[in-house]
Image (cartoon, rainbow, N blue to C red):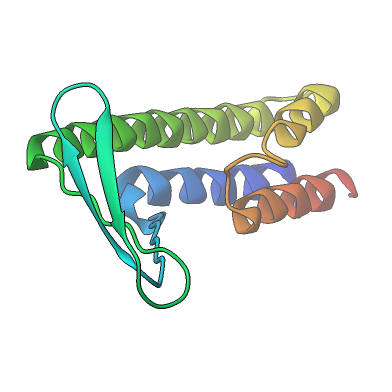
Length: 137
């Protein structure tokens, strides 16, 4: 594999992420089993009343939908920024690979910055393998 082929594949990954960012969805589910609780909220703070029965403690809270939607919008906005940054990062790597003489140390640093982050392992491993294969020629 040469650097041009590696660049094309990395660009395809970036385009896929750009066109379908929702392919990376994160969901958090919390389940606590046992007694039930009631929470009264409004503005700052919350008062909870727990009622016994069974094993463990179960607390449920009710808040206004508006607060939940605001938190969701902030989360989506932050995730969209991360996705855009990843797409940009991959695009810069592809451009470097397309240059007449790609800077291996720059590409290595860019690759290293993907590892041990939120970026799905499949993306960082494919990019790493592409870089290795393109420079082994």
